[in-house]
Image (cartoon, rainbow, N blue to C red):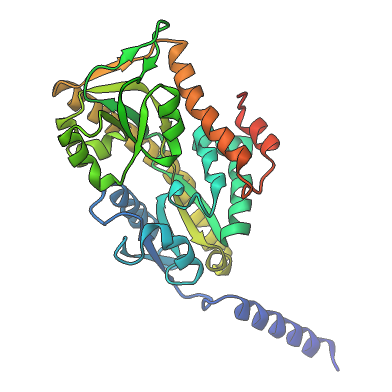
Length: 333
């Protein structure tokens, strides 16, 4: 058989194999479906919609992301499995929502997106997420939003200037229940929808939450003190079905990666500005800030991180080298 026909046959076979491996038709704009953990009106969802708008403009001809909804599509904690099963292709929401499936998400408590990329921690987490969730860790969006402690009355102080929550009942989540106890308080785990009524009735004396949630839920009507610094920061992720990502043309994959990396920076700056505005507005409305002087501020954060690290060490579902991660995060606890 002549060489040219043989080469042509090989090219045809390889092309057919590549097309069969991808669910998308080469040369056509790919439609991608995305969901959020919150309703469309939520500020977090609005941030993601701004990302989608920017991505669709940049990716015209390559891909188009269609937002199909929030919890009404799939409950937030069920979204990872729904995405794996092909109900949609992308999801945006708090990583801790699926910590039972992916406990490695706790790495966010020790670093920032920029630091995680520089240290290699981001790629390490991305690799484990691919293995455990069949998902691509696209980006850590809207970072830098603090998780603060708020109280109705001024909390007591330790002799060294720290916070003493003795005698206070604080609404908590399982993630920082032990932290509240370590500060002397009583941790009350309850659903977010019950917080307003609990504060109104005096069932709790304070809580841990973010500024945006505090304002959205009008909880500033009850709590009058905010402790600075924040005990931790948010981890809101955009992740994507790994098979869908792998099936995209290389140009589309590279563009999505770049857009995600850029949005990490842009959304962090945007949220920092909003955080500052919330603080100013709350202060103007009479909320007082208790700023822990050093070294008490660092000890406050270190106490929170200590509990997180202990939880990671004890968790048998963790599938990464924690000693290696610890060095990457420059964590000395």
